[in-house]
Length: 215
Image 1 (spheres, helix red, strand yellow):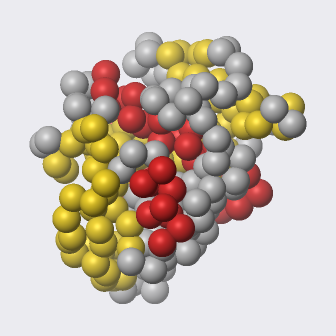
Image 2: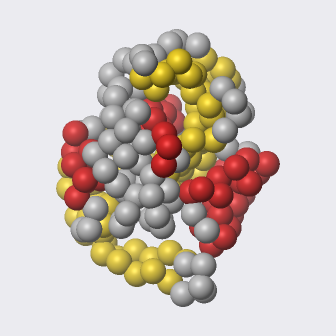
Image 3: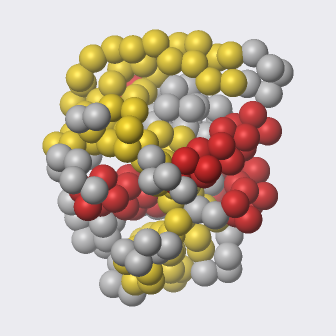
């Protein structure tokens, strides 16, 4: 994808520790979930399905707890920073697929109720791997490990559903995101054509590299 703070439909992120707007994932440090390392507190709260989501502090110097939970329809207005109307429509349509458990949508919420990151896991697009996509971190919360936390939580969701690997895609003009994913253990697994709607009614078409990771 392109600039991680802008419009990126796949699961790519912008900088090595940035995970900006629509379609990006970034984050610097370790997370409570997954296998990227321990960071923050161990306070936890249940998600919609009864499984526990982690609550962490982004960094030791930042006295803020972040809660990872299921994204709900009422959260959409709080995600205006992640993309334009076309992107938010895709998020809303994807939420409908959570009802049939084809998709998992998670968000990261700060203690003041602000949503600072969001992302999805498609469980049916690729039978052999859960697909991470629509990964976004609010610009003000990048480079704090939030993106890494989000990725780890989504990886955990894939694992509890029996997936042994996960994948995501990144555009060629996003080398910093690709570097982040490599650091988290993702490796190239092929190329593919992708497209997603833009606010002007057209489609953005691009070629991405698929990155895969064993859980």
